[in-house]
Length: 454
Image 1 (cartoon, helix red, strand yellow):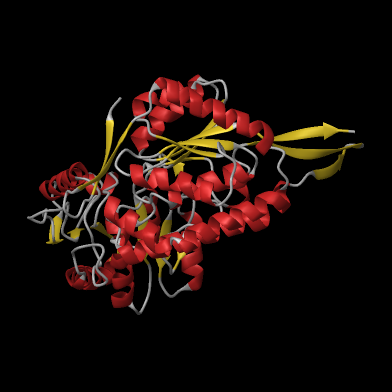
Image 2: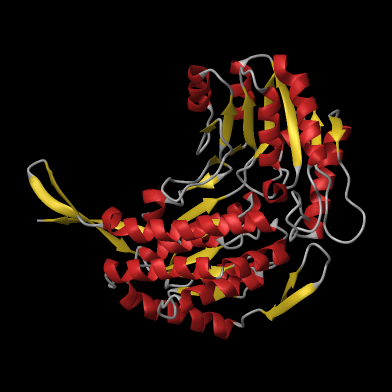
């Protein structure tokens, strides 16, 4: 067994420790989840609707405590923690209100025969969650997977063990049967043990490209369906417009959301050359005006990165990009003193052979790329191993729609920052993963669409 440590990234204080589960406890938890599944799969939607509204109520009732825990454990600015948890409660209510309609039997007549489609749950779904949105990224998968009739066992990231335990308590306090949602204090070395278990029927991972390759391979090895929501190097395209200052400010605000540790935030700012110099100027002003500090304080815009090693990785990527010829506009340094703080950073004149052009930089770093025209902007946006989200800003409606249609991603946003919606499918293409969370597609990710012929 190893020890999982919850460490405050603002000051390095160890908040709490947890011992990982033994093999015996892992087996007990899986057996309990399976036993619960045998009855949970037949619970009526009317009863489940009440439970998921209860879950939303527990989030709302305890929102300040949950937001504080999240901020102290991984560094998200407190106001953003509150906003994210409100969205999570909304997500629970959306699935509570819509699951029955989306999963009801569907009658059909085809080629002279009749029958129906039935959506049957699979069993236990093994969830693997990241640290950067400790509540939302668990619940946006766990809620649809369990309301569909599955049960789930979850391995949370090793640096947010308190959040993992607290999510299980939310389900308990909302009145769910034991075993519908189970927190697993395990490290990645136990993933194959869980995935290979005969009662585990699917795998839902949100994480890095590397984690996705590893877990996807294991899921394939044991013939378990999987959904992988991985990284992104999303494009923010600046098209023809008369409001470049406003667009630059919105872009930088989006870039530092959650301290830049957001898979679907804009990272590559692709700017038409006629606006390029002004965009860089206004982006620098915006970054310079952000307040860096304690994420619990109301005035703070940018908090610490979640772990020291993550800050080191960001700094290494920045320094590599500068050495490759990029222009450092602002930032580029670790902030001295306690905490995992990194300066808001802009790298300009970035080209295709450079590190930040090709790699996801998980921190407050904006990469700015100059292009001659809209066609080149689209080409650069698509010149990436990733394809999670993207956005395009401008004033020409037809041009904006053209760009959004031709960028190869899971989602594109026009004149608004990238995000996710409970009612809409979320997931990427290429190295950003496969499968969908949220919306009808997320609800049906781990069900068997069975054909019943009359």
